Length: 114
Length: 110
Image (tube, rainbow over the protein chains, first blue to last red):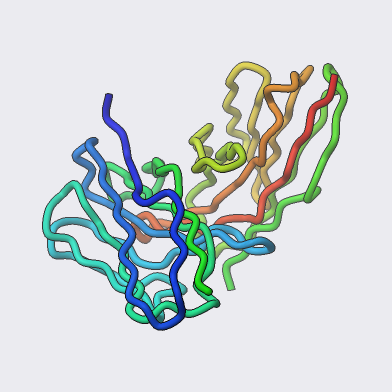
């Protein structure tokens, strides 16, 4: 069955280290998204991509970067991890870019920055 | 600023006790709403898409409705397995960017 996976599921790192979270989908979806989820906030968009070599900033993109070299993967990199980036990170994908195309979410990565 | 507000924050029901969750929105150029269910430690799971006022969608014990200013998720005769956090998200015509509410945490007890 087609799916979306994230790895690692849990990660503990130290302030200042570079961290990369992986996201892989087998639906052949064009669009991929990264969100973070924190208590008191809804899911907030970090970066998104509409296809290979396309990346765009979301509302909370500072300190994060993504690259899209193929359809299946959108890794999220924290250039220099900060304690404020402790959160649960979700990757999502959708087939089309138009309004109303539901996004399908991965299981999440819980990141702790000490 | 685009905003989606869900209420109540938490709701505890007994099995069989029907109720409704509210999602109100002020999203510029709103084209519709998604409802998602999220279980602890998991990603959101898609439930419904609603596009226009008056539209209704149903799935098992859940029915989602949409007006011009808000959406409701009605839960009829809930069971313990309906316990989860329910999220709504507004979307506009500009691609796939969503504005999420903070969710309603539902607990259904025997």
